[in-house]
Length: 392
Ligand code: SF4
Ligand code: SF4
Image 1 (cartoon, rainbow, N blue to C red):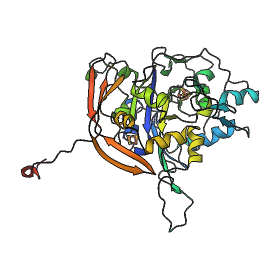
Image 2 (image 1 turned 135 degrees about the vertical axis):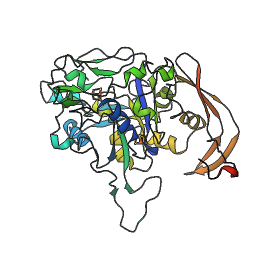
Image 3 (image 1 turned 180 degrees about the horizontal axis):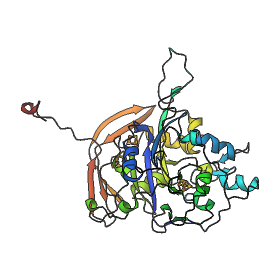
Image 4 (image 1 turned 120 degrees about the vertical axis):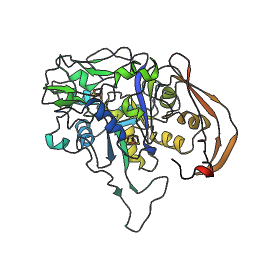
């Protein structure tokens, strides 16, 4: 794959993991972002964080189907026998990325893409809660795969390793920060050509007609830099992550430390996968796929690692249960975790496999090595004293 700039892999890369299995589409994340960054004139249609329903939803409408068609050469295949732990952990994609499809079509631009029409941005909740069904009306679905299904997908800029937006910009107004891999648009350099809107396959840069420049998610960088007094100078998670009611989100940095929870879940345990890896931008937002949706659909969306990821999530290992207990336990970014073993509290058989649950304690440490959070796998149960039944 040809990319116009040198590879940019910072030592620590802004990254996040969303557990789709737990999202309730409350849109608290969406509003947390909106009320922080996009509440001004000309930003009405801007939802830097949005949560859409698959298979029918999408913002802008049909963004993924349209981009998949642009890269479809009839032979897009994954070779799962050829793997490289770091660069191609799930297999090698033998098809066209957005960059190759453009070169093949002699488009004289770095990536294929399109600018959505105004009407495609008119509602962020197209297709919300609409299920796809192969069932007859009186048939029920049952796990593991439902035949009547939908799921929610949480979307924001992926702060890609090979950003389509950055490659596309003729003004060189877009840059990827060396310290944390966050991708930003320099508002002073941007002239509003909308090449980033066109060539980001995820459609996350948005044009503001009022100021005539493009804008996008800034990964709440003042919080990431520890500027919020709440965390006393320590890096803090973004607004959308911190607000998550369903506790489905964990944000941090991808690095080489196998005891970093984000790195362990993505690179070592491989239970979290990138969105449309075939686009070729190497996105840095990862998803634990929903266990009830058809695998063929999920494979198209998250690549060939889906079967392994779903199996691991359905019958979680002792370490996975402990690490997942960290989701939404603190707003301070966890850089390393440690597990202290506890007693066995439950065992059963799930889909023919033995499952054991241990009440381990998981401890999270900040960038400075200080303990910032401590929690257990079993949620504590508080029983209210009968004399306080009616008090608030
Ligand atoms: S998701 Fe789009 S806007 Fe964000 S870095 Fe990747 S290409 Fe750029
Ligand atoms: S706040 Fe969390 S649970 Fe609610 S929609 Fe956003 S990601 Fe889903």
